[in-house]
Length: 118
Image (cartoon, rainbow, N blue to C red; front, side):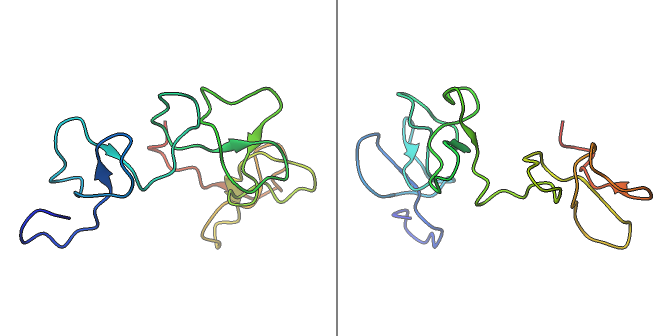
């Protein structure tokens, strides 16, 4: 960050400029996050999660996704059932994160969906 005495990573700059100049704390009015990937839709400000199946790079947010696009399965956790692309929220209580979606959960599995997700 260009602010004197600040050691935080600079992510913000004026739209159209490359790289970051200021951190979130010291950004100036009108500055945008230049380091984080953004939706490719003109004016998109949300982080992208969608692309065509098999592509690694995320291109669009849920609002601007094109027909047939899916959540980036390369970087997102998916249900352990073959062919299922739903997010996994169920597993056995002794585990630390979900492994199966609600449809494919096994008897005795518990919900790992964080209560503050919605």
